[in-house]
Image (cartoon, rainbow, N blue to C red; front, side, top):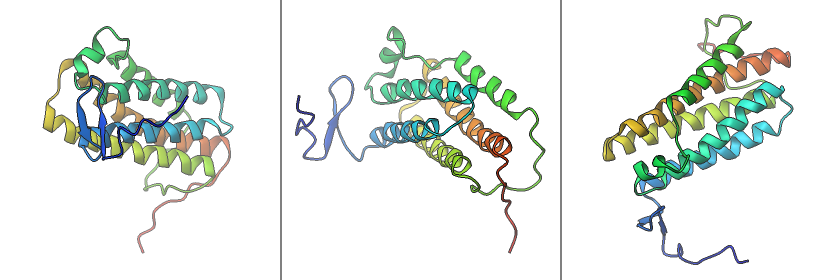
Amino acid sequence: MKIYTKTGDQGETSLVGGTRIGKDDLRLETYGTADELNAFVGLLRAKQLPEDMTKVLHFIQNKLFNLGAILASESPEEMLGDSGMLIAENDVHYLEESIDRFSEGLPKRHAFVLPAGSEKVALCHVCRTITRRLERRMVTLRKREGVTEKTDFCLQFVNRMSDLFFILSQKVAQIDESENFFWEKQ
């Protein structure tokens, strides 16, 4: 099986549905960022993490794949319809419950945390910052194309993900007894 099709050699690709767009299109940038985040979440999962964290990250990876498919579709409403690709309110609640659970026992912070520490902690911050970029791209895309009730939860889901990655960075630091580094005005 050949993986190359040569259909993108002139800088275009197809959306789900067949419409051709430039590889520099905002939509492609947005779902490409979701794909990049998914790869980094996979790298984070490859580290030795507690089973409950790995379970949440596996859930996130599946939802990121759904999100990529939604964003890659010329008709997100149809993609969300009967395909099972839905990102729904209960998915947002699952992330909120996970944030609350992983926050238990963490000390209160009164300073900005630098994205440093152990490799696992730093990787949580990489995931957090890519999530924030994904969120920015989604907001821009939303301004261009509008939002519907079915796609509204996608943005909420991404917003909660960034909070989750921050909390995971703190929980991993606590579990691994890794030092946190704080911003110092200099």
